[in-house]
Image (tube, rainbow, N blue to C red; front, side):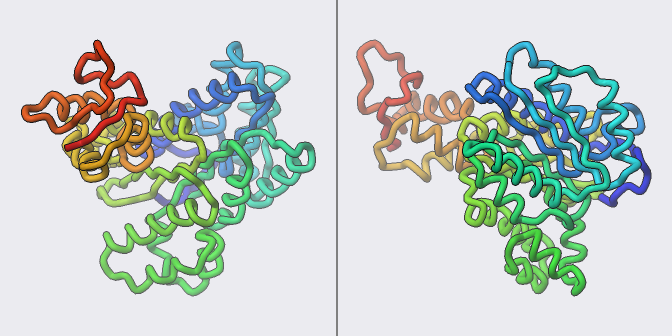
Length: 368
């Protein structure tokens, strides 16, 4: 996906899908934090753009602000919005839109015009650190057209604060194209936070290189940035090959559940892909049913012969598979228990329990 040269440009289908994921997730995020006792929290848009597309569609900064406004009667928290846009012409358009938008006094909105994301994020983090020993939760949407200006150290620092999350656009197509360019070595070192990306230069197979770079960035989030939960969503271009990935990082199991819910609303197959090769009006890549047989195989492989609980199975499904917490009871546990012969035994089934029900998360199970 080439970076647009105009002030405002046409909204592409994969960007529409990306923004729908963002919108759906933020709808849960603002309510969870607003009703969770936080007096304030912050939203950072690192590459904000002009705030609208050529046919009037909202850009990511306006999506975030509108989500907060939709829920303002349900929450009393203050929200700080930082929109960073390096191109002054785009920043001016964004500022004009924001100036025309009514909002509560407890919402602080600032456009950093002509600024780089790394610089503004660093200043913002310094500021909130100096104000309080308990800085507010932050959601950072880091959505560049390439890889420069996105230091992994900034991602690390954001995730070093409690209750913070990131959604990062990993521009695979551009990264892959320039991965061996000698003038980009320092930029890639900074983006990945390691020199290990250089091993990709000698990988000839496209699929193998794709997987290597994807897994490297995910591993960096987990190991170097100490992010407990990481998920990715694949975006494909009009040639049906990988354009970029969205990486989501959080230390909240509830946050992970809500992001997976947002992703599943776009891709009911659970394979977490959206392709521009499909109908632009169709946000779901496949119309087939999710691969519940795969989920069943994953659960059996993990727990066969072991005694465990419903709660442990659910955490495994949410954190270690593409599937949601709404899938495993009716699509895996129930069929296993009711099969003949049964493939699952409830060890401590209470009197009166109806077989095939698992509302008690402390039920002990053994997959046979």
